Image (cartoon, rainbow, N blue to C red):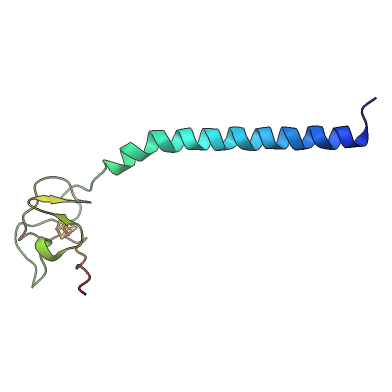
Amino acid sequence: MISHDDRIRFSRRRAMTAALNLLATAGTALAVAAPALAQTKLAQKIVQYQDHPKDKHQCSICAHFQPPHSCNIVAGNISPNGWCRMYSPKISE
Ligand code: SF4
């Protein structure tokens, strides 16, 4: 006959196994999804990118700009003199 303590131990073991399986599944899903998310950039048309500044705002002083001609969040060739709706000024010290 199974004692009360044995049943509690069995329940804990099942709960731990279920939790570990859930973590393993979540980790696998993240490992698969992360590279795809990292490679997704916004289309220039969606963010209304233009190859000239807007007022005094331009890519070269945006936090997302990656010299010489890239952006962390917008796809394609990005001019240092360009601008888009996602513009975010670098924080100056
Ligand atoms: S203004 Fe837009 S395109 Fe230019 S660097 Fe910033 S986010 Fe990228």
